[in-house]
Image (cartoon, rainbow, N blue to C red; front, side):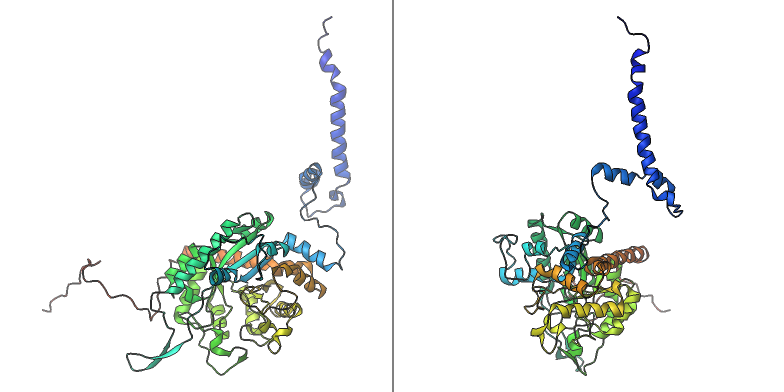
Length: 477
């Protein structure tokens, strides 16, 4: 028997009515349970009427990203681990590449740095255990000898650094250190990721990798050349320490002003005229100026001219321990205006001058709290100097101990928010500011073509064409 016209469609009405009723019930539930009915006028009503983010969360079975698990506030280790899982811990200084150079001659493929437990402070397994999020690898090359006297052509005695005008081995060795660092990252790309900007660090951390950045520990590694500086930036280096433990063409090192531990009567000339060009060009590039290892006046001179925030990649607080590698209070206060950060190291002599063997993780906390008090929590970070010394504080013996340090801070009353700023947010913030300053300067200025006033250039070759014709001398009438 043939169906009557319209009989099929009419039979579907009960199902359709049920669907409409169910959907209406869901909408009503969302309205009734919505904060919009609490008359919060500061929020967008549309977001309350159709809160798509909540609907999506319900459908996917996932919690909101900012919803934190419940943890006992007195379980400091659990709180520390939660902080490090959600905020990338960025260490400002690690000398592991120097160990590769010194002990393996940069031959890395005969070893497994993931499964082979190393005696050093650092290996990839230890980094995972320490919940690390980012590492500045120092591509350190030893500094030339200190200034030595030499009699100049004019008969005056001057001081110079041996080798500054010779074919520069420091630049060659720096390139080799960048090479081995990049090869290490590529070899373990499932664990490490080379990063040259702050966004990459966050992405790497979310992917479960340790962001790997390159830092150069001494202006001598540029060969005292702005052109070489630019090329090192292009190769991925994102900070340069202005001096290491010797003066150079850019400024005065801490060793000139201090006798290793206490202040001496030596003069502190500070930043050189060419050093001013160096700082300005780093600002233009978007390269962080690192003031670890420099003298107090060099610190002050740089802060007076830098348009971008600076870092101290591994320095402590001078008022806590008067070691020449630490930062005076007036410089710490200057960071409030500059926006820079001091990244506290774990080197025992910096933490306890008289009895370095007694230095502990609590001394590290003391330096952090002092800097936070004088400069503000926005201006402190972490820069271990792991694998650059055998003398590290007890309780922070290697990279596995990062959660222990954060837990000790929490025990001392530091909030989770401030701990997040310390471990990574401050560095990410100031690096972003460095990049923003660079974008502005690049619209205003060409690359700086200044060169060191004592630079020796090779003599002109007589058998090559002249760029410009000789100027004709007008005959006098």
